Length: 181
Image (cartoon, rainbow, N blue to C red; front, side, top):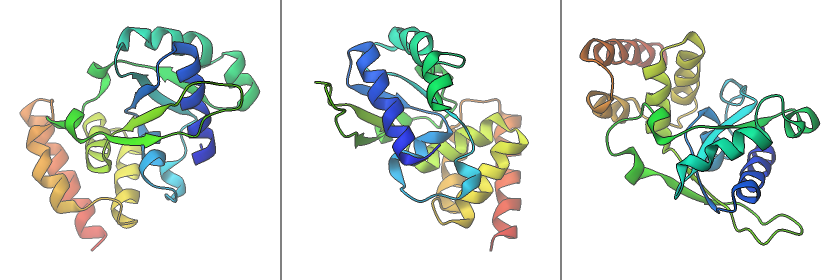
């Protein structure tokens, strides 16, 4: 997904839901805060998001813009309607969301704003998931200087996962930090 694709998905979701403020919690949230990111961080074809003021309308996003929808077939990328509980980000993440105004679309009266996970919170949510692609994402973010190891380690204890999971995330981050030093 590219920045223009990201903006298109956000604008389409605002049109579908009738709400302008959308929270983006998946890997593509990085496109809201950074114009240029390593290719490993742009591989996903979906934007995980929900309406900030009415998360239940995420079902509308899935139905109109989701995987297998005519939107996805037409454009090759799609929106995945999720809820706030989907984010496995450190405590306080909602207060660190980064508002990103999205340009208005032709013939739309919507003025969408993508509320994107702050990059450290985003990377830690990927680490909490712990899939190999998530660790690749974290490593790419560290290498590109998008996130700092010290901030990641500082927020790791606040992840909403069991202690053993937090210990694993810390160990893996320290290993990534030594390979990128």
